Image 1: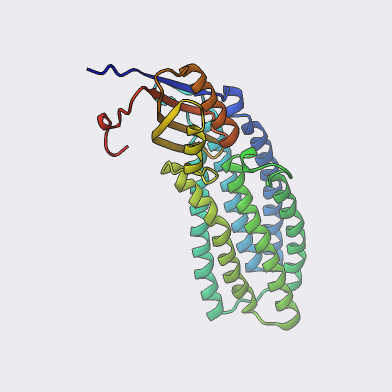
Image 2: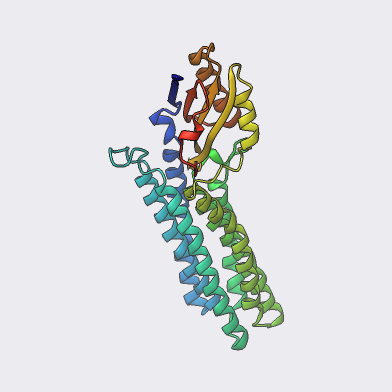
Length: 315
């Protein structure tokens, strides 16, 4: 009878302070953008009332939805920073993903509303004061550019430096910026040519751009919730790098997934030679995963022979 020996390691290089290190910075960014968005919302609402511009009033409503999205992101950041419990051992970090996904879906709902309204305006054009629309749009371009700069990633860094909550707001801000340019063009066409249909026509194009810009955010949120392999991880290369560790003979039951948008986890079984130093193998595998793939939470089980036949087939 063969005596099967195996050894496992659960390793986490992410200290609690590092896990949420992006949260305070993200929160400061969102508060700044919230102040800017609220001020511009008040300006648009007032200007729309004074100029009797339905376009500006509609854009003010759009800005109000952005304020709601920022508040949702702040709420999810607060929830995600709560400590782990016995019932939720990974804590509430995925609340940020849920909030970002809801923000993306909310944008799609908003686009549907814009398109419905645009079709109605094409059928029944509304009078718009073009000059007032252009003036407020110029202010909006400056305001949204500032908000985009605050929520954008820093040069030389990747998206891991900011959470999905900030990236969700960034998508909202970019859609606002594009929309403001569209409002400026529509206002100019109305003011100089008197073509009232320019406003809804531009709105349809804006909606299409918003859909394109938010697609990546929604797809990433779904991938994380479905525990898909992270986009930056080549699973075959990862397997080869683990097998390159001296003493490793086979890697199976290999799983890699996202805990959040900037934290990755791995679980795997590895068959090693009987005469090998298991502590060294585990240490070298840990370094390979950390350095090559930025995976800091890992569970690796070492085995003397292949125990795969004793494990569930769906793994």
